[in-house]
Each structure stands twice: as C-alpha cells, then as structure tokens.
Amino acid sequence: MQNKQLTIVFVTHNTIGGGVLIKSGIVMAPHLSRVVADISIEASYPRTEEF
Image (tube, rainbow, N blue to C red; front, side, top):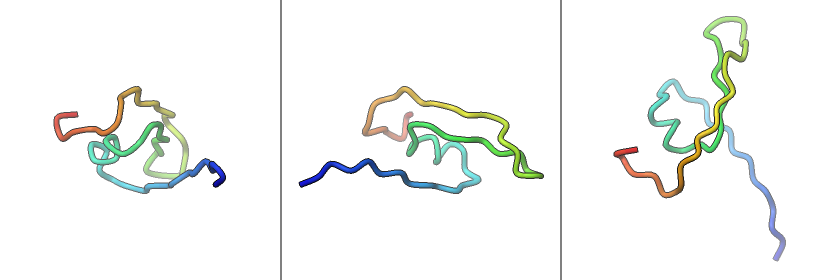
C-alpha cells in the first residue's frame, strides 16, 4: 500500500466551522480575490465543539 498525501479544498463563509476542520487556511478578500491572510492552526485532532 502506498502512502499518498491528500489535499482537500473547503470553501466556506463560516470561519468557526472551517477552523475546526483545517490545519492551515487562506483568507480571501471579499472583492478581487486577494489573499489577506495565510493562517496555521496548531491544535491536535480530533477537535471538539469547545475548540
């Protein structure tokens, strides 16, 4: 069996819900599709609702 790295793209307007799912994320500006932040979350999995 081969180990493969997997990238999944979530597009959401719910930053709290998205933060529970991601290790890193990019925040886009509402207009002109500009990147305004590149964030990393250093929390272990599984994450609970209290996160």
